[in-house]
Length: 113
Image (cartoon, rainbow, N blue to C red; front, side, top):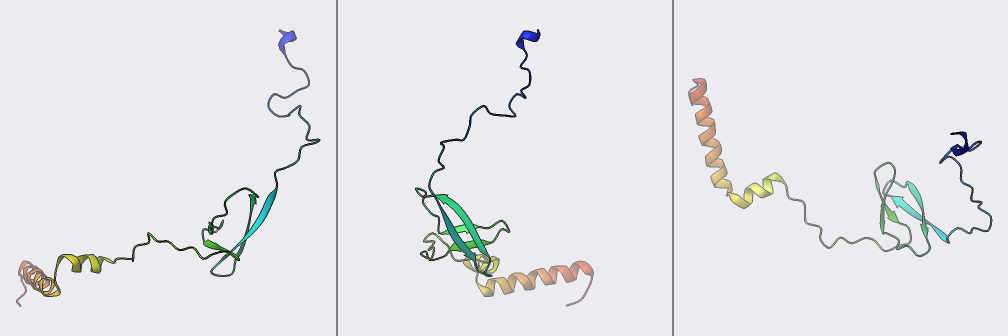
């Protein structure tokens, strides 16, 4: 049993390879800036495509410094609940529904109109 054990080595903890003669890939440091002025620096490979927007560690969107401003062509305008309601009903219909509901509520409570 002792002939199968590796003495003096911790398995998986150390590598027998050396780093001599190894050159890292060429890199570039890119700067992004948030709307509040926070600077974010990200390191990319020289061959990588640089995204125009980066999310910082604090969760804020940062825009590439000296880059093109991102344009989202698929962005829909923000629709509120009121906008969606007006797509289905007119204001006159909504006024009538409100009056009917208030009347029903007052009758349930025993109040007079």
